[in-house]
Image 1 (cartoon, helix red, strand yellow):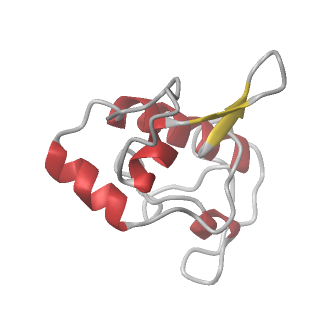
Image 2 (tube, rainbow, N blue to C red):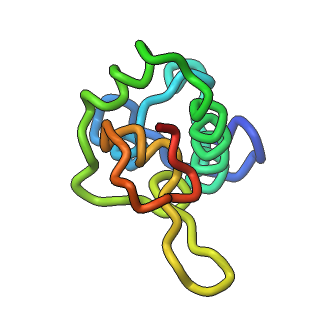
Image 3 (tube, rainbow, N blue to C red):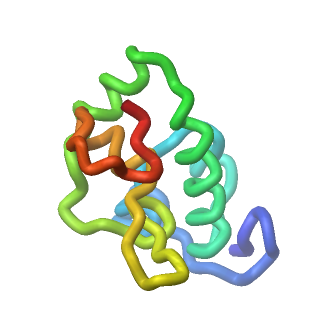
Amino acid sequence: MNCFKCGQSIACNPGNNCWCESLPALNNYDLDQSCYCKDCLIEALSKEVNENRKCDNIQMKKIAKLGLPIRIKENVDYTINEEGLYIFTPWYLMRRGHCCDNKCTNCPY
């Protein structure tokens, strides 16, 4: 099987503990219709995470109910800036469910 976006050869096992199942399930891609390599999927997730920063209160409450992830994933839950500091994404901060008053760069609250 090949990545839907870049064409790279990938092993995809939807529904059978595929590596992608550890990433958040968001709206703009459909894993039943197409599979992505890790880089392309994380890129798509990152794009949607940033777009979701502007979602309404109902969507934010649904995201917050997911709770914080057990393991955070680079470019999904955080990025690393030029100084080597971890910057939480809007997606991660929405999952927290409230503002922590640390003046986070991407705080949606």
